[in-house]
Amino acid sequence: MTDRLLSIVTPVYGPSASYLPEAYKSLLTQELPDGWSWEWLIQEDGDDVKAATFLPSDDPRIRISSSRRGGPQVARTMAFGRSTGSLIKVADADDLLPEGTLLRDITILSEHPEVGWTTSRVLDLLEDGSTRGFDGDPEPGLLPNGAVFAHWRQHRRAQVHPASLCARRELIALLGGWLALPASGDTGLLLGLDAVADGWFSSEVGMLYRLHEHQITRHPHHSAGDEWEARMTVMRERAEALHAWIQRQRA
Image (cartoon, rainbow, N blue to C red; front, side, top):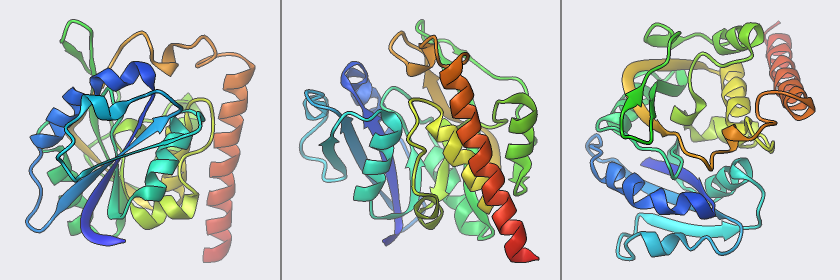
């Protein structure tokens, strides 16, 4: 592990590779605290992605590798396995990081050692270039351990967006990375982080979440049916087990 290094993990498959130049451009706008740097771990999910054709070959911070097709959750975990930073930032190939995002994430986790992870306000980026916000964001600041799961149990929706996560390396290692599900594995990781550590929510926009036709969230099984029920069960039982185990250790 390298202190003062932020590792950005990005899964990419065929249709999303063409968005990489815009993602890279958004990384170049980022300011970091003194002494910090970033590395970008791009993980090709399957063959013939050819991510390198969309990015410069002379930036040593970009590290591209490929693995057998397993979906974005597996690709994120594989990218994590190649990373060396003390902090891990999620950034999908088709999303953008507004200026100030990385500086804010690093500053929060540096100044608040009791906080294990951060999330930010997210805006949908529509195909016409306009943006759309979400209702129901929590108050900015500390998210006490268990608050995200309590909201999720009631609404089956996390109150903060897992696509904006930045977390301490040891916590992601403790949880084994992203849940290997066809979808919602990032929410599963968020619920796990919520079980083991306090979090933080920033009301400043930290992610532009691009909407397009190739997203897995547009699959008909994403929000209903047997697959959805199974995914919800896995996430719920894992979070419940983590909370119960931690409570026993504290007793």
